[in-house]
Length: 364
Ligand code: BGC
Image (cartoon, rainbow, N blue to C red):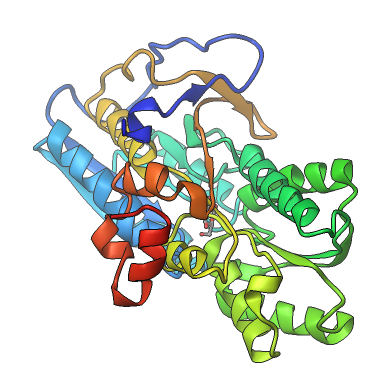
């Protein structure tokens, strides 16, 4: 099967046509061809993608493109103040480009301002920074992520004879613009399909433990039979929600639960039947694109033509953007997405507890 990654489409996200492909960022601190320091600031580590995919894939690509580049890496553990200090430290250490996956979409504008004062360009990575003059934005079509979660779940509810739910909605962190977009996309489907929302929560810090508490509250308020399914915005919150159902004596198989990120544990839960779906976002093209841009900027060169294909407004300006396509994953297509793309290999997924389920799902 042909790798999905090879086919990953890049979307044009806004009207207004292509932005100048050969954008040069004025005042870039790097000098041509000599490498330089690139700051990579990631938001948290409870979600496995950052340390398992984003960081190593970004680092590998930078290393491949620029042997004299150095990466200053930090992870903020979902603490906005800590991220601010990490950004300041990176600037003090001489970072010439900042790739920032912000904990807090709004307060991060202070970091952008600081970087810009020092003529350091900023790439808003995965999460859009609002109200700040960022140079580029690289992410997935995040409203589409929510739509995929909503569509796959409401189709399942129809099959199970509960087309109107009701459901419990466990959303992501209120400080993450992506969480707003996931919710918007999912809600648009639930509204149009007539799926009722019995209880809804925003989960501070995307914390799986807090998601578990929210689900416990929902079960207490609604009773075991008071809801038909759970919308969880990502696999971490899905894990929390499923744990709450189990400890309340609910069979998770009977309450289809969504997710996102194609975390290894979530793929295994999907095979076991305790989680219904996830959304696969191929991190490699996202990290690679960010690395290509960062290297061009640090070397004072033009960003390669063809990378930027659209614009997204961040409440201050239209930011030149790259948005990639997410894919819905259920038991039926793990093999042709996750395994074909080598996001996880069959042997990583099919440990002894999952051997039989893997066989049934055609994963070898
Ligand atoms: C990312 C998700 C991730 C979540 C929690 C979002 O901004 O797009 O992939 O699960 O943050 O870190």
